[in-house]
Length: 188
Image (cartoon, rainbow, N blue to C red; front, side):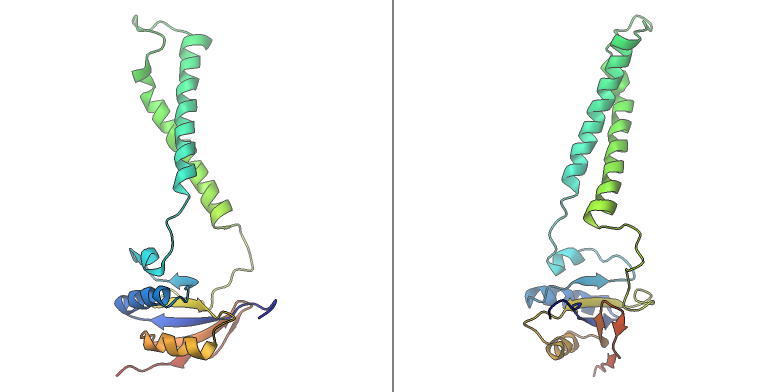
């Protein structure tokens, strides 16, 4: 295939149960489905496709704890060392009063780091004009399974495999924007 864009075989499904079976079958057959487009979230789809659990939660947890620690230290420093005020005879370092700000600073830093990690690092969701969908109405009312044609496979074999899995329509897509004509599949 060289430097050319890798073509994909797209299988379109109207029934979510058939689509879920096709996603599981693609993982079992070793096709390594590239993407699954759905009009609404389908719980458990990642497990069916063999996608591992995300690593994003670990750095977000670290940043959440770091934010809570910084918020707590900030309050201790302000109330005990920077500007100590005797309020009703309470000690300067009264930690129960710090719980709310500690919690909020942890949540704030955790949420901001989650946003930065997901958008900028993990998903590379920077604004781009090169991102293209195979069709504009891809997720209106159908489910789509995109399987890349590898160097060891053929488009015809993947076409037949998609039809065996119950795809209503099968088409080919090359990421430079070319979409071949669809082949309709009729089910008995």
